[in-house]
Structure formats: structure tokens, C-alpha cells
Length: 125
Image (cartoon, rainbow, N blue to C red; front, side):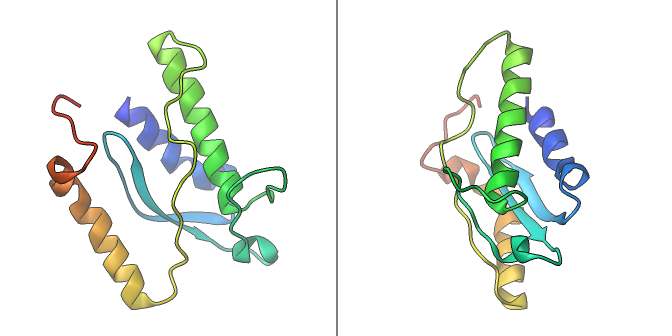
């Protein structure tokens, strides 16, 4: 299941050519990742968390697509239908400096080693 989530995350730039992926990791119950959105239009400055006014190519549209595709694929593999895989929303942050980028990259790299301290940790996951 983890490999499916990883493979689909890696495919994001194929489906959204204005996106490149930086540091990322799939955890047992969530994902941390840096998506670099670059384009010549307003998409690169738009953070959209969904709803009726979702901007095509925005972070909201990218995450919605990722969650939808991965949920369908994972449910298909499990022989289930309509089962929720991801939390309803997501957390986003605009990275504004090289220092902040380095700190977030380090957080992502170190996160798996801290899994047992996570409030949602359960052994056997």
C-alpha cells in the first residue's frame, strides 16, 4: 500500500508539468512533501484548498487529484469501494526563504524516526 502512495506521488509532475517535487516521505498514516509550483501564470501564487472555486493547477487541485487517484487505487487493491483513505483536508505552508526550506527538508527527513512519538502512532502499522 505504501508503494502505491509513493508511486502516485512521484507521478505528480507527469500530470502537472508545472510542478516539481522536492523532499517527501510517506508515513503510515500521512504524507509530508514539498511541491514546487512554477508557471508563468497566477497558478504559482494560488493556494486553493478546494471547494467550489478550485483553481486548476493549484496546490488544492494537485492534492485533490492525488488523494482521489490514490484512494481509488488503494480501495481497488483492497477490494473495497468508497472507503476513506486520507483525511479530509491538508496542511500547507508557503516556504519563503532558503533557511525555511532547509528546516522543512530536515523535518521531513527526520520524521520517520519520530513516528513512535506521533499522537496517532499504533504499533503494527
